[in-house]
Image (cartoon, rainbow, N blue to C red; front, top):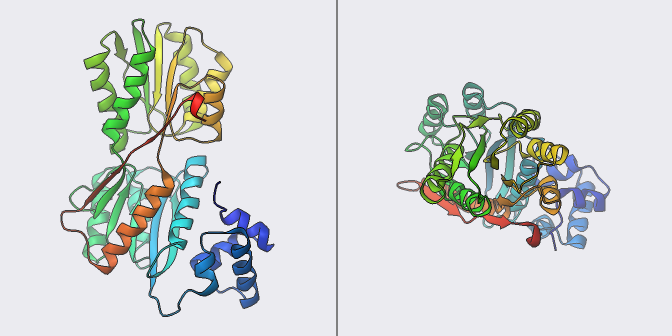
Length: 341
């Protein structure tokens, strides 16, 4: 059974989600009676923070976990944020506080600015960001100030950041190609969507994808990558164009975000001939796509495990010092097909 999150706790306590957030993460002072009501509600529904709210020792040091994500409105990042709140609430040995921000853009300069703006607001930092010299320069500045920075999902600032946590993106790309190569028996073309040319994780997924098909499915030709900026509308329009122009299209791989647009286009066009489609992240929309037979495979990041491991790594970086040589922590992806949901 899914463990209750902040929304469930807010409903049970009769307060807003923002009030629960303030109590869990100490953003602002909350009336004692309100905090007590939330603690009692957490105990009733078995919220992960119940024990800490009921009587965490005030003598424990406060540790501020800074996290910078992007695409705040996407279901994947909503789930990511929820998993982070839970992981920080369950932190042992410290009183964890989550300082969570979102970047509305993937422009390197804006991402670098967001990173710099976290200085002084947190004790350790993790982020999703593009791999670009401006971002690397910002990480170098933060590291010089004593702030350890971890990259999430897509690596950046290699050699400077404290570590990377996420999937092995090269293997994820090869897995997507394996499924499409297994499904598409007739010669034809295959399309791949990437969020942008500066996402290191997408670059690795594309490399693994192309290498596998070149080696094991030479009857399939991979088209030039399509940049969708991880947006629904651009992916939707481009997918409709692909289906209309590429009569020998055998597969589509959405290596990052924006899969909702591809699902909508497939639902509208209903292509014939057994098109193999692989997307990233299990969300309500991709789950529906699997059930309807529009999708062949969903590769998903185990967010709860990722966030728990991240909190441990960040805590150790503060209490024991940055890891020598950095951390490279790969998690196995969760794979979903229609019969497994």
